[in-house]
Image 1: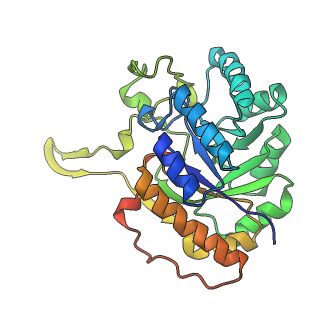
Image 2: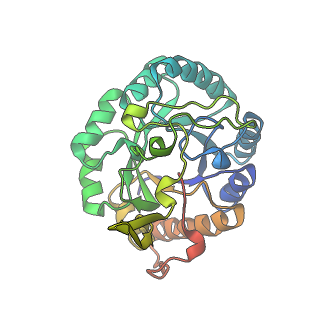
Length: 300
């Protein structure tokens, strides 16, 4: 039986504390201006330091989601900043761009680098590609089946991470062009400061305007006929977690930096209980197929 890491999201210092206390082995956070989740789910530098101290006292770790696709002029700035954050104790960084992944690993070989679910790895060839670039882990979406994950795990030597609780959107995660439909230049937020905009050409805008979650009006012959939302199905593989772990999954990842501390704690406890049941070869009663609406996750 191999060691399994439960990686929880944290969009605030309170959520980080709650996730770690509820049983997460590590949390991943966004730094203001650096990730696709938007400034509401990101930490200031002071909050990041606080989070690092909290995790260190608990013997746990913190990962940083730097999951934009940076423009050429932003790359050097990001690598320089990552050097300082690694010195502060950030365990690793989650990136969304193949070229930037390679650059970070070459510049900072001691920093663990994970290929985000937005990198689009879905099979053995994809995982081997990111391993060759220097990734230490690759994140797979939760809509893959355990046997597919087992085949990927058998083909690579890096860690395999599955986002078992997530929203499956109609677009490819991390490659959304919709923000630029409304905004080519994000509005500066005073509390954020420098906002990395990312490459528009590849859908790497550094701020998410949640366009896909806004209602769209439908017209026929100039007449308004309906108002609809794009489909976004909540996915939880808690009932299949034992099969994923039998397949060799190293990291169990939960989506939801938008979740408040109290709801995140409930979610983490359920997955921690399932992991412990698997470790003890005990029966675990999964949640009903219909997840509580309060667990709906928005943003990574």
